[in-house]
Length: 88
Image (cartoon, rainbow, N blue to C red):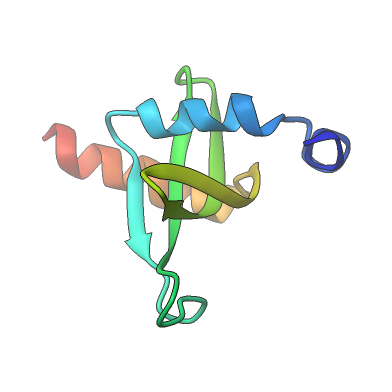
């Protein structure tokens, strides 16, 4: 958790808030999934302020974050375009 704060400015507990985003864009990550573990890549916002990109899996009914960071501008654009399509 400390490493993620130092590298990306967010703790994993703060990142968990992204999963409360009603517009969370979640995609199956076939390239990084295995027979034993399905992985996902999601883009969402924390409190509508900052857009976060995260790689995660579900384990024992809990979300396990593999990596999380502020979304790069291109991913922020993907997220914003996705919201525009939903809101219409």
